[in-house]
Amino acid sequence: MGLRSLVDRVSLLAARHHAGRTLARFLDRARHASRTQEQVLREKLARNAESEFGRRHRFADIRDYADFAARVPLSTYEEYAPFIERLKEGEFGALFGGGQRVLMFALTSGTTREPKYIPVTPPFLTEYRRGWNAWGLRALTDHPGCLLRGILQVSSPMDEHRTAAGIPCGAITGLMAATQKRLVRRYYVVPPAAAKIRDAAARYYTIMRFAVPRDVAFVITANPATLLLLAETADARSEALIRDVRDGTLDEGIDVPGFVRDALRGRLRPEPSAAARLDGLRRARGRLRPRDYWRLGFVAHWTGGTMGLYRSRFPMWFGEVPVRDPGLLASEGRISVPVDDDTPAGILDVSAHFYEFIPADEYESPRRRALLPRDLRTGKEYFIVLTTSSGLYRYDLGDRVRVTDWYGEAPVIEFLSKGAHTSSLAGEKLTEHQVVLALRAAGARLGRSLDGSVLAPRWGAPPYYRLYVASDATAGVRPAEDGPADAARIAEALDAELRAANVEYESKRSSGRLGAVEPQELAKETLTELDRRLRARQDGRAEQYKHRYLLTKPDEDDAWFAQQA
Image 1 (tube, rainbow, N blue to C red):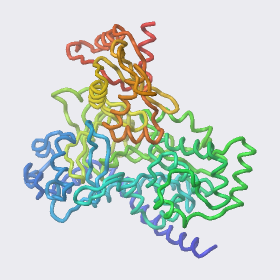
Image 2: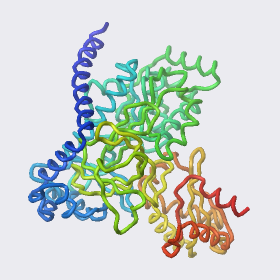
Image 3: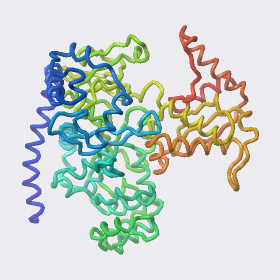
Image 4: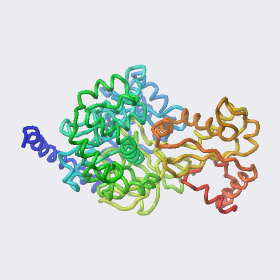
């Protein structure tokens, strides 16, 4: 046994002891969720009572939940945007008490062209990491063969840009990776510099160049489409990849910035025996697949909502390997912790945030109620409201969940979808408001009204959106030089506007996880009939019906047209 292995094993014993206490505390707090939630609310209010927001809402005088609900209204990001703009300038007192700072802003899609900037503070990071520790320990306890072996974790950079005050803005996964314990980081098979590669094809290839020759025990990334693209990239470029492994190089033909190549060079070395093994697998199996070159204990990715649709493609690439859902995660926080394989359901992380829930059938009602976790019912669906250490209070996250079970006093929940008017095939969280803005902008660019159009999510490899547009809107749309004409040009313009309007949509399009918008011309009467059918389904609320510019269920449009055939 080498010195490093011995040191790692001793360190692992200490880490497991600490992590074991973390998991035990997590489960104990879940069993006593009501008491835990009362404590969490008190701590969050006390910490920021002297902030401008806290003084405005008299946090210091709040005695219980009833006071809190009476003084702080249910809110969305738009209500917090003015305060967050001041945080970006370094005015931390707008939302936080003395001595607190913002480590970074986690970026995620908003309802307009501007992304949401979610403040990440030291307490928030501690809570986020604590949930990950509980998740990871349980996963490794269930799969002990993965200990002290390679980890492929796909993350994005935490510093895509900086605010005027110099605060980094990007993905919280980048901050998590950068601040991970040294013992864990030692087993990451891909250098962190790879996350800086902007070109998606080059980034996927580079990740697999480092990962394929290693003894990878498990792979983790939120989006299952990413895992499939990584596997497909290694297979499609297997000849170049095997040559790079043999020679200790990184293909000079891919778009990797010079500073990234410099950072990666020290991790490259010739591995002729590994290359020979990979070449033998490719020749014997006819292709290069993770199921053949890795001994995976499990893979981790989202399985709830539309993410479950990717599962049918996994066995061909990864075999019948267990799947551990990482839980309901958002830039606003970690919300659930799954403790079993092959289910999206997880225990509500009651020690991280204070939670309220709006019954799904009341979500758009002016008289909607906010319920505490103890008031929920098994089998019912709700929308989540968060109070967090990011300075967000009674924040409508817009995530729809179902209660599937209970662990003590904590509900076990599974993610269903984003919002009542949101579609997310690959994590893009596209809102109907964004679609309306994009249609108007595309129409203005082309000199045509696109009112009455419908955008429908479609399942495929990769998934994409189909634009149904009235044939009279395409008349007279002249092709750009050497470009598409008529409906195709409208779809191209809409795709460009959606990429500008939604940072997540742009990311998924650039990385190949979403395909381009596909055009479909229809007679105006056909689109009118779609509206009539939807209006008829309003259950007595036809007077409240508004034209739907965005459908939210994959391939939902097929059912409509089948009825008209």
